[in-house]
Length: 135
Image (cartoon, rainbow, N blue to C red; front, side, top):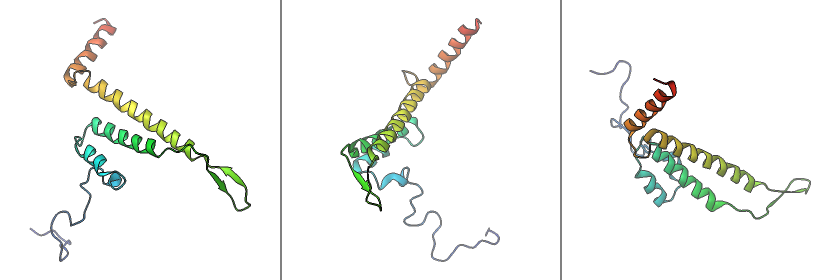
């Protein structure tokens, strides 16, 4: 049954059109990663903390490889020279990314526990709660 008020434009197929990258898991970043980095990301499960951990680790590697501590100077219109603080901004970004990685790794450990079993982690947490409450 045709939809009211909507007709399919001529020359278009149903579904995604050629060149549509909406289904890419990390399409926004894909052009900035090497083929090896994209392959490592493709090996991760789509909805898993582990895939986010892998993404942040790759970003940390890329930033680490680009860090440059050599002094660079900027000159303004009045010929005043100031030291560029690009390396400080990169270090700040690296610190934030490392903190995010740490949080994700901790989250994964809390959710999956050492054995990776969610049910065991929940049962242990309930047991600890029961002991704390004296039940």
